[in-house]
View 1 (cartoon, rainbow, N blue to C red):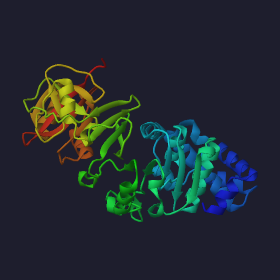
View 2: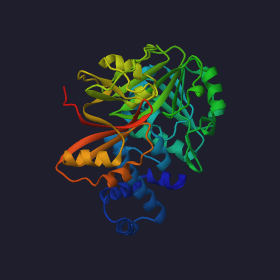
View 3: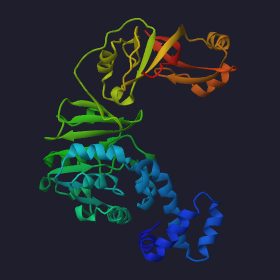
View 4: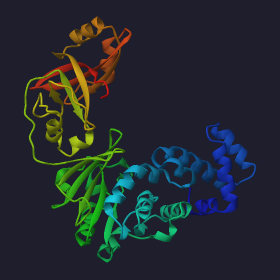
Amino acid sequence: MDLDAFGELLTPRGQRALAEAAELAGTDPVAAATRLRRTYDAALTSAALTQAALRERAAAKFGAEAAVMYFTPHGLEQSTRREVADHRARRMGAGRVIDACCGVGGDLLALARAGCEVDAVDLDPLTVAVASANADALGLSARVRVRVGDAALVRPEEYDALFADPARRSGKGRTFDPMAYSPPWPVVLDLVARARRACLKVAPGIPYEFIPEGAEAEWVSYKGEVKEATLWTGPREGAGPARRATLLPGGHTLTATGVQAPVGPMGRYVYEPDGAAIRAHLVGEVAELIGGRLPDPMIAYITADEPSHTPWASGYEVDEVMPFSLKKLRAALRERRIGNVTIKKRASAIDIERLRADLRLSGENSVVIILTRILDKPSVIICNPLSPA
């Protein structure tokens, strides 16, 4: 879809084509295109079908609003899901914000909903047109101004806050190296240095050495899946320790206290901390919450002698712990009549799918097995999920 085709999509005729494409969702793609081509030209047909498909995919991130929004494939992939963007916008607080690389606009919409006046730029004219159309579609255009521009040329010092979500894709696909972001990391840091306050959305796996001195790093998990890291600088609502983890949709927050988890023998229960807490190096804080200890000082599993329920960890009751041996594990599962197994691992090189095949499961029962190392010894923990509190 090019800029001209998108422009036509916004006309009354384009809207009719888009509505017809939405009605054909889930049907044979060739048949759908053939039907639309009876009324519309090839460019509009392609744009309408592409947009209808993107809207269907976007519902997972944007809910009901996806049905009236517009997307590009890369823009949708990098977009923040609404719950996460709204959380970040609430922390940002009201004021004038410059969004230095706005993409299709998911974050600027959240900022506008939170009461911010948002100026936004992006290098790609099509992406700018899509972001502007989204602001119009959701009734937020009075708070938003989107234009084609280079993030490196914005003047963050003229605003109350800077927001930046550098593109993390290159011609070879997704990149995890901040130096390969667009704009590159040195440009981003220059913008941050000149901003009164700044909020940077980055990949969850950002190396700690790239976090600016004095910044707060917040890792956000949504329903157990780590979605992003956010770097905050300058005065801000909720400012505090340098590392923070947040769980959505519940809104639970855990901050660094410096506590170190003790190391000790495996107990009756084992806990897997949420990924946001692990990324934020808050395993010690989680262990303290549940009165636990680490079976291995280098691995983020926690054990305890008493059951505990916390949003910060998934808990399991331990049935057996053994040194890893395929033959012994297979025998143990056969004895328990296990036909279905959930396999988790950390610090283990074992291929999960190959192991699943090698276990030759047969039976009516289910179990969880955890592949890990305990004091440098490859081990397997056979366990079952704790019942809800």
